[in-house]
Length: 267
Image (cartoon, rainbow, N blue to C red; front, side):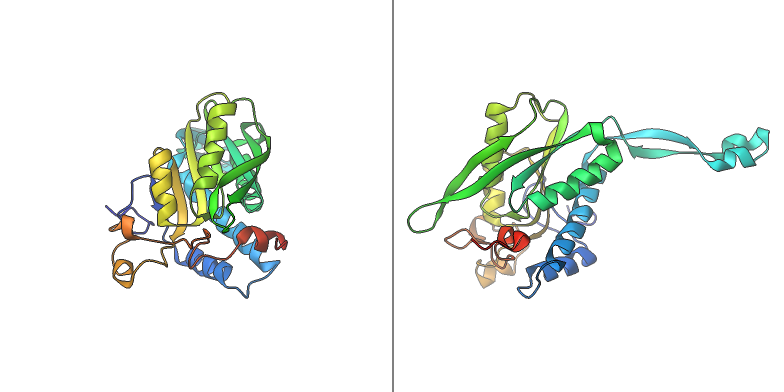
């Protein structure tokens, strides 16, 4: 069943491909090879504000709240309670950890951290950092992901673990990061949510196999190396036939090497 504001697909319930005209328009500019700095980072910042907004609204717990507005003092005493607003808001007891994966994930993580800290309060949100890079063989094919350095909290217990990384390509980076948490950081997170600009079918398959409870949010699913027949079907209908990665693990159509483009360091 298609969910409101989401692309109709046949993947798994944990996969959320958002469908928004404004976000798609900005993402098209991120994809454009002519888009340079500082415009590129401005666009990515806006897109991650949109993404984390949707994640919070759909994934985090709510509570009932009553607020006395200034009208309480401007109404007759018998009617003063009419100036009290009541409704459903985000539960401010919620805790969150944002994982910054250098280098492409650094900017998105800062955007998500600032947004969550503003909603939940600075003491309820913290940022972990992992320095990671792809590992490749002599033919430049990706063989995995390596962690070169880490600064993380001692426990993740009761917190939502938010992982903003622009490109959900093969899934190796996400899986390696989560293996690090499982082996090194104590506690069980309230939930794990990965947030991407785009994902591939290969990424979806790997995450589903290795970490099936992870919820994934993205603005697009890129399967540009699939056959024309597969591309005419609903995404996920023939997931084993869908392809979005080159032999060197770059996303097609994708947006090139976003870590390079974000930092202006092309190595």
